[in-house]
Length: 105
Figure (cartoon, rainbow, N blue to C red):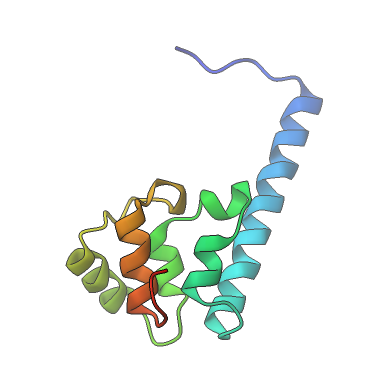
């Protein structure tokens, strides 16, 4: 299956939409790093940009978590490093919330 041919306007619109989503994800990650947003808040957010964020990027955005610690956490919780927020199951969401403080309810 090949990709559809886009007109110049459609391509520009798609690029603008993608750029806006990247900017939104970057702002969310910045706010997480600053401690303004926790994992519970992130997982309760709605929106395409949040749902397409990779879980590893969200964990790395938490204060005190870098590559090594984030990879170890996902391995321990049995969450694939390729998983996106949208693809998390209820138990995986609860485990992340519990890990970063707060109860799972």
